[in-house]
Image 1 (cartoon, helix red, strand yellow):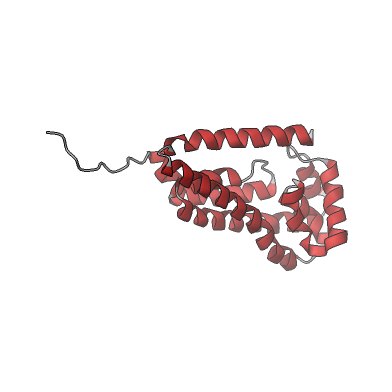
Image 2 (cartoon, rainbow, N blue to C red):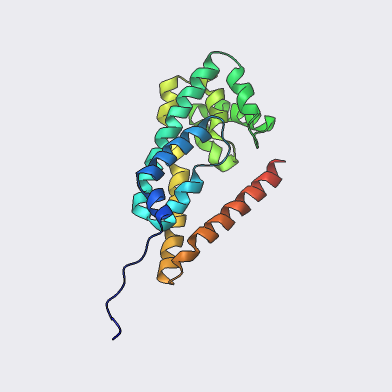
Length: 196
């Protein structure tokens, strides 16, 4: 006799890990790392979490912003004490001298709001953080950093949450990790070619 009761979806352990407390901790640490000297965006784990568990991924988004704010405070303070922070950021892969020039120009044109221009220009937050002490107080910079960091993350969350929903409706949720990986490989290949 064949059972007609629906079997619950089997969730792989890595999905539970990513969308649970360990994944939220990872989001915080990744937000901090990318805000200091790491070069891969925290959008990468956020977007996968958004594809799999959109509502839960909003907690990841908040954790990333918290990590980025801590990073911003560290980089601002480090830069405020001398040129070492700027030199360290200049050695990060995919950071170019032109990014510092553009960030400086943005500060002259937009004041403390310059940090919000980074995502549009492809300039990392860390570049704006080490340029900020000449143009802003620490608290003003951190206050502006909240919307400056959130808006891009919300766009990423929304796009990948919609993609995940579409895949689930088509019964193709298992394709999410592969599509996610291909997307980010493509993004970084294009960005690398453009920066170089």
